[in-house]
Amino acid sequence: MALTPLANEADFNNSAYADLANYLQNGDLTARMLRATRACESHTRRRLAPFTGLTETSRLQAVDVDDSFTAGALLPAGAQIAADRAASFGYTDMVRHLWVREYPPLYPELWTGQVTGIVAYWSYGNDTVIDPTTAQYEPDTGHVRLPLGVFTPPGTTAKITYSGGYTADTPDDLVEACIAMAAHLIIRSLDPMAAAGVGHDPDIARSHAESLLQPYHRNPRAPQR
Image (cartoon, rainbow, N blue to C red; front, side):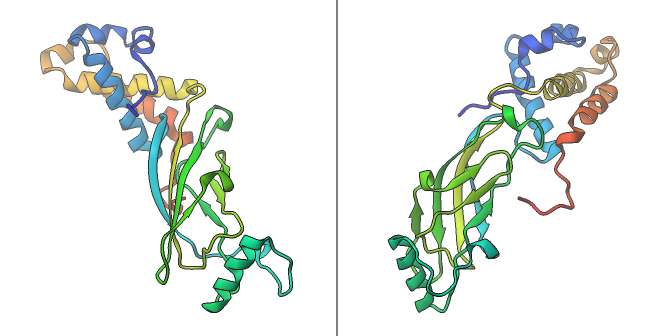
């Protein structure tokens, strides 16, 4: 899927930076909006624009107490087979939870996400393909609950493929941030004489963009989810 910018050419031409487009060749503004979108994502350490086919791996380790079965509990047939297999390897519980790394920090109602593929890898067995429609995916938090009946003991590596991003509508502050970031990039790309006459300070434009992006920033000290 081609990148959809957080702000488009019309948004830029309706902004206070519209005069900067006069210094660009035909088609250049589109490229600058795409570059500005990636710059916004790099600054926040998040994917914000719509994306598809993103693949991540997660190491399955912790077992939630709610997913720990006691001896003698009645399980669906598929889950019982997985439990018996686990017991044969010395495991008593399966890991059922993982989190994808990209989820909406704000405005979850504007975010659209879907899990399209899950594969579990384990050292002593074949890869297990999990039907993504049987998993419970929560786009607002990035939480994925794996179904009963799949063999996912601690130590399993899960590869998950999914889509996401602000697809319903882009929040206004992200649109404005993308415009300011594009203005910064355009001014920086001009030759010194042209840059001196544009009447815009590139550092102020960048600072404005970063201030708007602050609520979306992933804490670098927090573990990646």
